[in-house]
Amino acid sequence: MIYAEGIRKRYGPAEALRGVDLDVPAGTVCGLLGPNGAGKTTMVRVLTTLLRPDGGTARVAGCDVVRDADRLRYRIGLAGQHAAVDELLTGHRNLVLFGRLYHLPRRTARLRADELLKRFGLADAADRPVKTYSGGMRRRLDLAASLIVSPPVLFLDEPTTGLDPRSRLALWDMLRELVSEGTTLLLTTQYLDEADHLADQIVVIDSGRVAASGSPSELKARIGGDRVSVVFREAADLTEGVQVVRAVLQGGPEQRLGDEADDRLEIDQGEHRLAVPAEHGAASLIKIAAALDAAGIAVEDLGLRRPTLDEVFLQLTTRPNGQEADGANGADGPNRHGASGTNGHGADGPAGRSEGMTAA
Picture 1 (cartoon, helix red, strand yellow):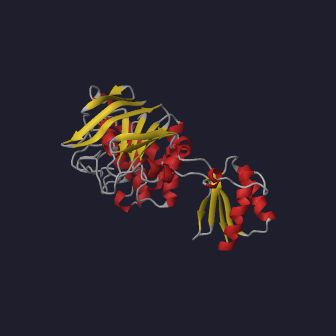
Picture 2 (cartoon, rainbow, N blue to C red):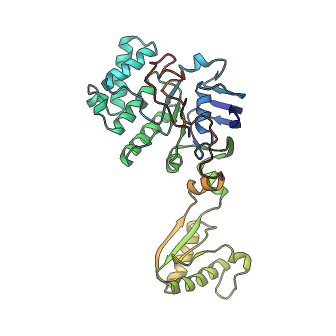
Picture 3 (tube, rainbow, N blue to C red):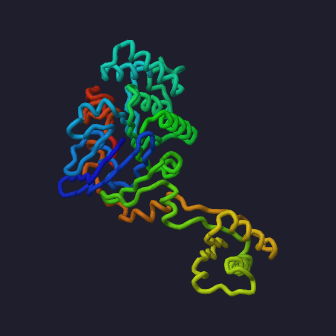
């Protein structure tokens, strides 16, 4: 549903995208991750026809992003980092407005607005001015506006920025429901747990290039498998516990652990913590727990720890802090739900009310 090959984009001397490839199957979620200035928002701009690439090709929903830009704008939805709805209008009138800008008949626009307000839990607030809405309500209305014509592809840039945990979880449920109905979703996010929960595929961009791609599990496996983590009560417990765990790894207390196996131990003296590879998953945890219990060693915490996307992110992105790759930080980002660079949700949305997105 989203395909890009060799996408390049330059802002003066700065090369924001350096040959980015992307392949997103229909009905899936792709999480676009990367540090600030990596090129994520520039890539979204290209895919939503807001920027013309300097090189490469891209197709979204069967449309070339350059040659078929006008047609493509009616097949995608785009929601930026901040809710871009009119605060003086009611929720219902906002949605009707965007429906009319997509050239929906007046009656169809009203029916669609009613349907979306109900779906996103806003029916009771439909006739209230948006300025009275909470942040979570505005974000839901913003997302509803991006879906006014049921686009097959939806682009979300930092969709849950500023939301409280309850609102974030509610929005995640809504996005999962959309994807289950066949919508293809590409999202950028700084919340790595969000990508972990939602994305079928993750693409990590760094310095304008794809640093890695794959499922969350595949990326985590690249930096190592599961580990058993043990926190001891006292330093003396740690010392004794290390010997017990060494014996477990080696296969028996009578055998000595070699230097190579010794390197598998991670010891933190300050926190009385020990971590070792869990080659057999939960079975390794059970075996170590039984050995420590038999030795009478008290532990504060014992668990099976899997690599996190945070660790993947830190390992794959190495640029110094503050170095920016996007040449136009926020000046001309995707500003409305539609794909017109100066307008709104549709191809000819309302000018003059756009909210610029900071370049990721």
